[in-house]
Length: 393
Ligand code: ADP
Ligand code: MG
Image 1 (tube, rainbow, N blue to C red):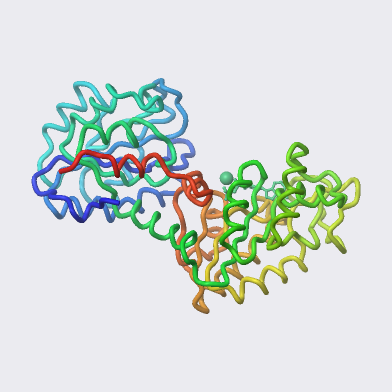
Image 2 (tube, rainbow, N blue to C red; image 1 turned 90 degrees about the horizontal axis):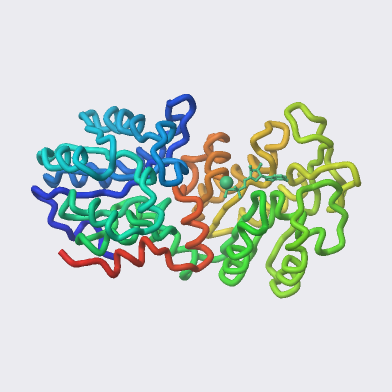
């Protein structure tokens, strides 16, 4: 993969695709991790004497202008973090973007409004990409969270500019590659979350390379049901039980929960009970893995040399249902302290690890939920493939 290191940046106008798809509440950014993660690339370019034109998407405005999804708050936050002004263009293409981009001097930065206000972005439209590209002389892809999509700013744009990966993209790809190619063993993958259908391909692909695959979260109930174990009113995907059964019979390295924490309602303050074994009574809902399962997970993790964790093990958003997830975070942190290489990916998993105060004890926190999953499924990411085929400097 061509990276930013090999590029002549002095005096150049550089278009950087960043991932500023940050959570907002009443117009305020509630978590600026993604903006912070972009800083190494931006600072490198600024130091090298480039001027920066940043493009990004926020939310799903579906090809129409919607002030709710404006990137303006991101410009303000970036300016605070870089301690320098960040200009803003109200449209990512057109006369305002053109004149503001043209006026940039080396060391100056412009953030363009949400790419997805134009339908051409998600359609990977060539003429839209060409207009975007016309603002700059070099393109840098650093939006790891967006490279699993073939959009104008991840794919078509590379037809018109010399292109390379930024530091964040490079770091994500090289780190996640360590899981798929020659991981230090034992390699333990812990996979949880809500839906089997979201993670089935990851389970299949990782069960080839991992020594153990721990299944938790709501996904586990579909697997348990496929074994004829009663799961009460737990979340289940009935159309996936056959597939779950097939995976369990062909892969021998999967670990399912041996007990659960159950409740009768999914709400704060609901009474929680622990089951004695893997089955759940008719009126109860599995909301978290149980203590025996946590112990088993802790034991398998304590011997691991490589760890991937994706997907919370319970409904961690509700404090009473978060214990299994927090225990797992603590076990991953312990194993890391003992020398294991650990990766946590997925929006909710990262939130859980951060909420529990374990983020600093993990080797790598992956910023892109969908992109990291697709990479771990073994797929080629379109935004990475596009860099390989891009025009040369
Ligand atoms: P990530 O974002 O880390 O990839 P997912 O989006 O796949 O994770 O799954 C996270 C969601 O799974 C959380 O909202 C959590 O509440 C939910 N979840 C975990 N366990 C259960 C469960 N037992 N029942 C219902 N939902 C669950
Ligand atoms: Mg999620």
